[in-house]
Length: 373
Image (cartoon, rainbow, N blue to C red; front, side, top):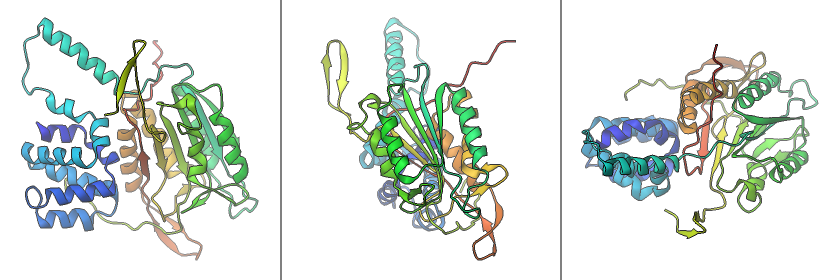
């Protein structure tokens, strides 16, 4: 049973397991589930966090239900937030054989259905919410201009309008103008069930750059929308999509083979509870820290184009965002090209995106209803 739960939640776990939690899980499973050589492969041959998570999950699930149960028990101890967010206890409680329907079982079924609904963010407002696209393309120097970024704007605008968002596009903003924009939008009266902000610019380890070349940190972008500064979005998902370099290094290429609760009280008939002010954030970064983010001048950036494709397809299949971003990671990681670097050398072009999140529920964007013929 537990091995089936691992397989069922594979994509969500790959997206949610942090490097620190993976390390502690390996320590917990050393000897009784995983051998020394298996741990060596996960720790040293898997170059990215997502690859380590994928290899760990697949390795344990292949060992059967008992091994998988030990891993899930360890996860509950090491990352209770992720464990509860994925509702793993309820997955483990599902019986392996069918039961005869009765009034009692029907009651339980209704309760379970309601509990499952409570694990998904509400996305019913019309419009669904605001989507702000900030595109810094012109940096006053032809060699520094981000040619092709306009293709990303078009793809993002079309996508989020189709998902029911009110989309606004901001072009070529300085760092101070970007900071002011974030504060302005955090106080907007038009917020719905979700907020999305897409920022496309140059960047480095410290953040993204305004079109004046000055720094705007990730905190400058996200903090105006936390629970202290933006009450309208408390308990609602806030999605930030960042297309920017996070360093100057190019990722290396390796060969992979597939297979290798809060306090609550009852007030006026409504359930109320407290959450941390930094809850309900998803930050989808185009690349990992220290590395460049790749863009095709003729078609747009690797990350944004893949994200738009998979988010459109995934929303039509009612997939949650973490599963979709895992597919984006896989898609972009497999892509390969050559670029001419600043030293005029031809080098292999590889990259992988990196999502980070404090989401408490499943985030599922609603695809538009297909028109009947």
